[in-house]
Image (cartoon, rainbow, N blue to C red):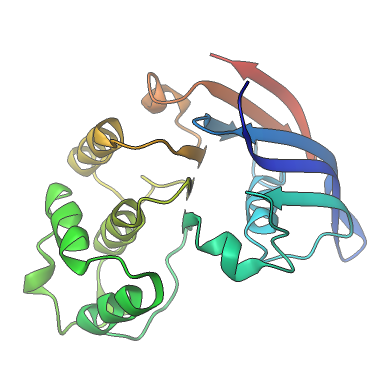
Length: 216
């Protein structure tokens, strides 16, 4: 019997009176790897941000490892690594950012350096550079390295390869294949073909609803 890591029941979320999520019900079990697809505005990112507790839902319920994301956000974020489509404008230097990550999550910064090297990013060459001054690809590589170094129970990637060149995409997918612990993942993507062999479910959203959920 598979254990449910995430339980979403009849979730509705409105912005300016418009339903962005419309009675979404969805379970994610341990070891599920999901390619989440759909047109822009389908509700994919809103659903993910609701799972993380960034948004408070209007009705329904969400549970992550038994915790309510809105009420127990710190406990939820301790179990989840999230890579946004657009990296935040962090003003900390790389060295300061990694120190903050270590203090807040206890992850060994050497693991982040090693993961970054596997993406062809040598962080030692950029330690005094502010994060926001890195190129888009370098920001994405660093965020991916942090996420993988944390060894989280749930990895959520919102268009993770959008800023990566073809070689970096190849390195990224190789890193996913090399993960050596049990985890679940949600990949919001327009490139489902790139995830072939890495996912076991395809979820398609449109107009705030899950319109297709198939095992592959």
